[in-house]
Image (cartoon, rainbow, N blue to C red; front, side, top):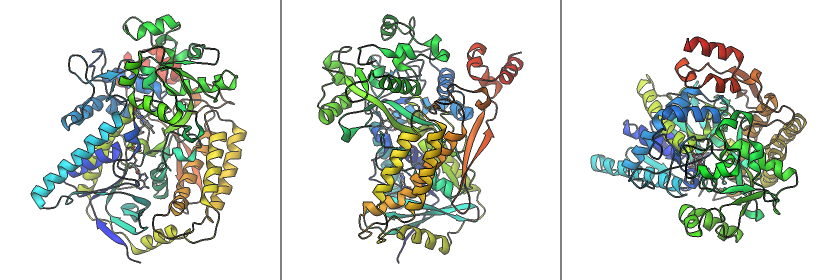
Length: 629
Ligand code: FAD
């Protein structure tokens, strides 16, 4: 069977914000770079991002700076973040946003002509650089334009647009290839015709995004089957923080065909409020102790905040997402939900219709077209939806390198930056900061190599056999297995978790793994979604098992991991990370505890001791005293 082969220095898997920024960096450092993506070029989650990119530029409130952003990020992640990543992110995000502007991004403006910044949950100051509610689209447009500009430079120099950077769209990678312990390339297939393709490359950057398709109700689209997470595991890398999944508080709940589709947090940032069936603004009842000092306790104060942020505390609708999602869940469970099983999100009584259409054009259209609801005249009905995974490939903060030589990861597929919960807007900035670092890390790795690793024929043959196995097999329908997995994760490892339910989920996942070995798809290799799903199932099952095992192990509630049987954060777990790895035979997932390195004293002392006491252990407070002494 003929196989298409290509040689590159760096192969970037994924063409969202992280992948594109990594590829641009690798090419700028002189590396021959391939960008491979599962769907069309330009179609990635990044394009769907609405609210904006968080960067402490201080354009709207000059009191903002990287230290405030760092503190907000650590609070949001309940101090489980890789603090070095959070530091780099807070320091470098403004430069990455300005760089985008220099490459042609047209951000919304303040009256005095600076990049405008909007409020978002968990951010102390208005911080999200945005383009209406279509920020991700502008980001991708700009990064793609930069890729084209580099290709034009290459044409001028080498007479070939694709001499140094080439896009392979609608191409799914199913295996990373190794030479000994090191990365040697990647194997995949073209979705259009099923042709196999081998990339020979010493460095691979994973930028494959999230895992949402393992859940029934999700804001994620079809590509998000945890491929990068699984590819990393299968190549011997470790995943961390897999128990932490963000359920965005506001997904559409109606009609059923669009259940889970995101309703941007900007609706709340721009004044929208949450009410239950009794018309009550219930979020005032759900302000946790650790956040009491920063959030308004009356509607009057909360409303004044929109016009006078210096003298009032923030509305509780803008608490971090995990808090709001849990509150909505509790209201619905208590019988105070909306007719379709969510709560009401109202912007219609808060802003003039024209203003709503100007500030939230996509939301206006989304509800009008999908639910026949005019959000300028009536409230939306919303509820939690599986949105984002904080867990991912364990990487070095500065270089984005995993523990496997030659393997790098950036964006949603990487773990650590967001700790137990990500603040809205911190993903788009994460993609830019760590995408660039991953591209640079991969380029530097290639420069240091004494010998280029070789792809061996046996591993290519094994990858090909694995890919071909379900084709033509009269086995089980992959859609059945997928639906059962989604239901299991949604109902048993969802927003509120219990030991017996997670144990049951693991039993089901174990059985589904066996059934998945026998799934089959009729038809040929020419565009065959059933066959593609058979291959994606391996990834979803691996990732789901990691999520369930880690969630079962962590006997506390923190950020995006809520245990009904262990409510509240436990000091015992404060510095423990859970690391997942896969046995060499690919059969067993192991979860191990790892102690998070202590924060550098200069970062630690950015916090007030009183606040730290809410999060950290007695021992750490003693270290704090020593640092400030
Ligand atoms: P993605 O943009 O998800 O791209 C992943 C890429 O990997 C795609 O090109 C895909 O085709 C490719 N891929 C996957 N598997 C394979 C494979 N096996 N082989 C080849 N290619 C593969 N964050 C914010 O900060 N602000 C927001 O306002 C915001 N709004 C959001 C709104 C929605 C509806 C959603 C879903 C997310 C939102 N987020 C937001 C989160 C943020 O958009 C994502 O976390 C982020 O875009 C992920 O970027 P990424 O570069 O890591 O991956």
